[in-house]
Image (cartoon, rainbow, N blue to C red; front, side, top):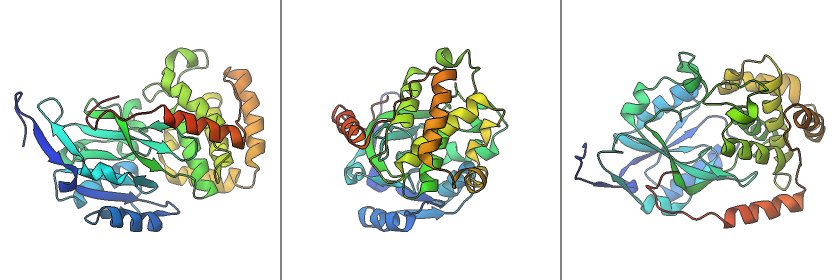
Length: 305
């Protein structure tokens, strides 16, 4: 139902279908058990290649017009499912993406977070592998005006269950944080065109995580993603193709020492992009994440960033 301007519609999260969207996450079966215990009505969509196709499969699996999506490496806060959406004429057709806390580096932003979609939005979108090549849709959903980034954090994402998963997570963010609305800036434009928050996130991906399993691989991946985007002719839009990333890992990366990658590429990034390259020690990483988290407070499920 579409509310009018004077109307608000309350929707219990518990009345919406919940789709657990998995692909190749190493702990997807373990997490599925946890999700089912937390959300007994949850459904699962597994193994669909391509972000656009996978989201359309999730929409097809939902019996409610609006549905909640949980990524395969995400564990939600159970309190989220006791919440209500407040919809009105301004937001009834919007997609909502809440923040997730990243286990590797403590960052809290939309990457990996719980989202709430409408079937109409999903069925109409053409992104990632289905994009027409427009920069705004080639590697992201988030530039659509009906896609709202929300303030609150309701889950934790764990993209570090294997060396490859951690490297891929870092690599993808190392690419995407360098882009300006999906476009690669020149070296001369880099500091001016990259959003300050994305630049902050990028430097944290480059610096924090040695205190967790496979954290070194995540840092190495982030640095490699930045290096390949800014200093090579590699087609950065291929970051959305997991087959491409798996090939890179198997043929170029996995036999190397992540600490050697961090050191070697870090020197290039410091010299050519003027990016500070300080990798925090185990103790320093723990300290940073503790205090970064302690400064964040939820404001309300419908509050935007």
